[in-house]
Length: 365
Image (cartoon, rainbow, N blue to C red; front, side, top):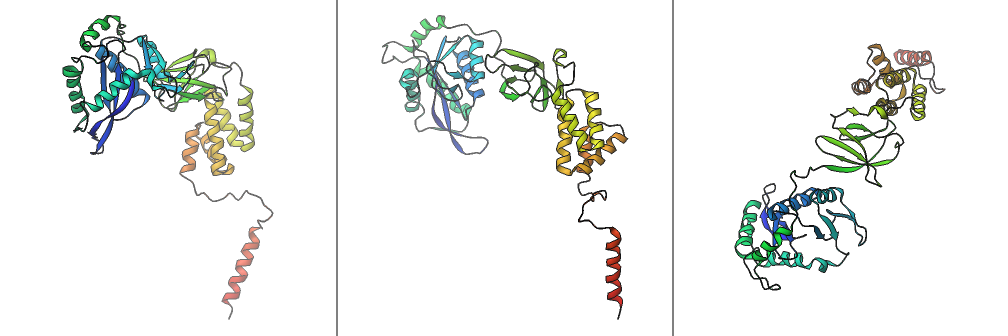
């Protein structure tokens, strides 16, 4: 597999002609090629192009030889390359094995290099198309009527005839298509959870502060060991702000880090501490993030203002970080509390007498 430069096609988003990318898969025995066009490339698009090529062939190759482009290979190494997780799992789903070339050695996949050049020089040279569908249809017709029926210069045989001999050796297509997912790395927070699209999912005990790999789609969120790839936890997807923690992962005692955090809230203010204690009592470890949020509000708006907001929340029996945040956002310019004590602040009576004296002097003739 490889990419090459495709024809100029009008991009519907910008209305301008844009150079496309030409994806080419070439079989090693018959030199049969599958050529597909795309405007842009990403890991997801790279994987989808493989699937489309396999479906057009009616089977799967046992080995995939590719260049060290980032969509497929994260860390090139001739002996132990690090493959992109999504690409690796797609190949595992289809039963294929990736074999990246040595860095700087494109001749290792010379057949597909020739397939890219063949399409660029023969059917697509100098042409422009108004849509990607039109360009793909033109390329498919050329592939069927000319490329497949030609006598190959190396084998001296017809490509279609040799593909008919090679096709039975392909692996069968799986019954179910590959399920796409997103992936990334997350750090396990103090509450034992990782954040994925504003929802929180519990990790096993002992992972606080460590990095885990996360795979997620519309239904599931999977936490994996970054070194071994072992599945740690699998959770159903939650709505934004929701939590999903296995019962076996809930601590029987309050962790030391949480106790220290609650002690910080007590020092920040009496009502701040009481509110945070109530949040932790009602919600457990998922409240840790919200407690940190209250402390960040105290840093942003000041401890006295935040303490007053927490007092208002306790008065109406709403132990929620969101209430405190909205309370402060709607009162961002509250006057400073007169409870503040500072040696530079004089008694108010002194200011009163000073203003009275100045006013009296101005009124005298």
